[in-house]
Length: 359
Image 1 (cartoon, rainbow, N blue to C red):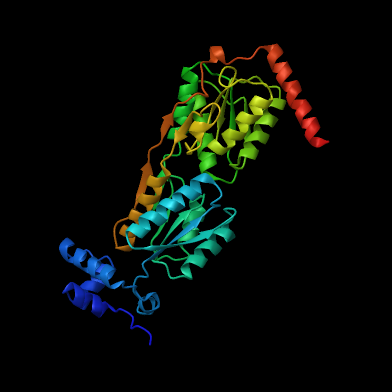
Image 2 (cartoon, rainbow, N blue to C red; image 1 turned 180 degrees about the vertical axis):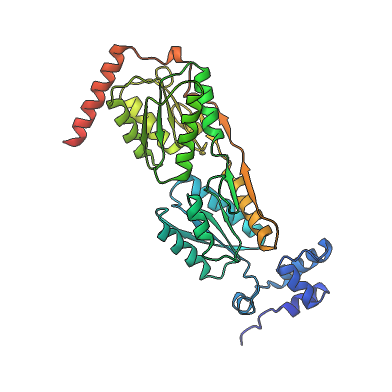
């Protein structure tokens, strides 16, 4: 004989409260004292009560589920943010369902959001790089549903929790210029990425304040391979440079390998900076100077703000700070300028490597 499922009435009886009080606790109502809330939670745990999601949804109640639309979890930043979202949501007794997209094209983004809507989520976090226009269009897919964005411009009119998109590049350029660097290459992220565009624009703007401009700008796709390819291409242009500003740490890893294989010494001949401060960047060779973004904080704060929106709270537009982490890939320009003979030797080596790869 099957065991009878535990109901809200069982929980209410165990906690010594009314059915309505248990319902308010489960739906995160503010009109419950902490002591009563704890009694209800203890009863839920004691009885192993599991809410009937289907019944709740049919009754128009909250599903205790949030959705996360995200780019590829194979990349460091999205995976770290997703882990933080799931952990924080779980701590608040919410489930998380994820819809992943391979690119930020409008149809792919809309399909991901619709996939989450089909699962009757209470709110959605969108961690996909979107223009202001596309973010607003995405929001209109479910105008009444709380939705929050992680990768948009500060000019966006929707709810968001984002990192300061200009501070990181500002700190990087200022540090390099203070060390005497004037010839700087930019290895940027994908051209369709809002974050990549904002970082590159900020770097160029900061260079202009010193009457400077990038020696060269080459785009990658966030991967280590694209960093290697972009750095190799930059070296083949035979332009003199003393520093390389890279859009993220994974691309910086590829750039470091390209420089090393071409015979450049980092940081003695060329300084290199990354962005993100991934857990591995301190163990690169040399350890990478980079911009730290606290992905765990972003994920946690996003869940907290989304739950506030679900509960009827006010709009949220929060910008989180970033910081410069100095390690061993940056040095003064006096120690960073290769001689003409060294540059010619290194370019010849790069050309030979490319010839071998094409055979």
